Image (tube, rainbow, N blue to C red):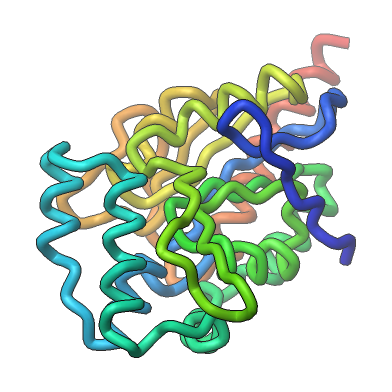
Length: 243
């Protein structure tokens, strides 16, 4: 499988070469959609026995920015003495399994000429592994910095979970895909849902419903992949009939 083209940094957002790509694109949230874990950040905190609930509440209530929230989490890791080494966090993240059917489902999506992009408020180290497995062309996730293997107190908030739509809009303006689909599982994905042609909430939170598109529940990602493929097949059929 082709290696992921890692995004460079420019004007505050990662970007790839400014080349158009007419293939339809799927913007996938990662945590809870491509993986079985709902939050890679929370998974690390739980594994380390660290309580970041106060920081999370402050972010949720707009008392701190996402950049501040990220740095406060890193500070808790470092101060605890449990996660000073990058290898410790990477080993924890490597325990997170893919959602059942993801590898097979994404292979089918690639065969049907879909482009796959990850847009996640999760941790880039995990998104990098997942992206390589599923053949993602671009990855947008939040970065932890390490120097000589030691985690640094600053990170890079590439993806504000409340504002994923900005990344979607930037990608679409550069690549000009035929059509766009976004897949998420929570209110954090609303800004993606409102900036794509189709949106799918996959195994969404119990108290959330995607009013902008489809809601789907399944224990097998392949069901989601088949549904996404059917969207393209329907569009292709309409084009043939018009021609």
